[in-house]
Image 1 (cartoon, rainbow, N blue to C red):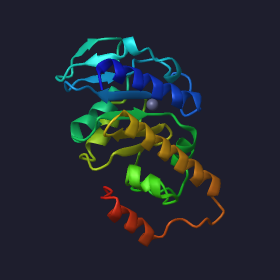
Image 2 (tube, rainbow, N blue to C red):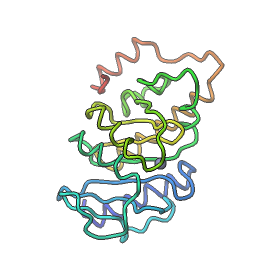
Image 3 (spheres, rainbow, N blue to C red):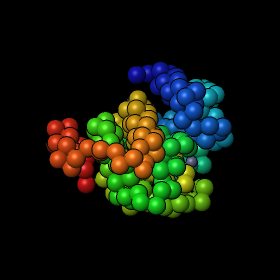
Image 4 (cartoon, protein in one colour):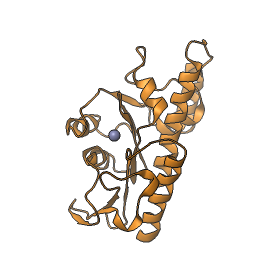
Length: 214
Ligand SMILES: [Zn+2]
């Protein structure tokens, strides 16, 4: 993929998520690795509905801003994934309604945020770690992701939103949508004593699809 195609794909996928209400206003941020080891990042204060391919923040492989607008304030979250996961080719963060709602529930498993309701959430996300609440812009958010030592591709910031890394921009977006859909299902089924996947079914998925499940 050329840099121009990557710029356009970032903006197209961001707009698609905005149009479906997955992150509103000027929330959410998105980044992707370029072929030369640099990064393209959504600028601070921008809306997913109106990202301009020509104005994305561009970093070189050494982490210096080369051109474009100033990057998102949540850049430390993105850097933490790239620095700890060699396979990370893209990172997406949303303020998505149902996953934020689920993060506030009293009986959520912090080590495995999503209940095992559908196979794709397990296959695309592995175990999602619930991180505590941080003040916006607090660099401790990035430190908390670094503390996971690259073992998780997806985290949920309590009362804030999910952050997901993928091998490329499409994989990261697909995975974060699966996270939000599963949290939505969890909210829908809460209180109904719904039948989740059994531990054996989960283990079979993990084995068959070689899911990272530490
Ligand atoms: Zn945020």
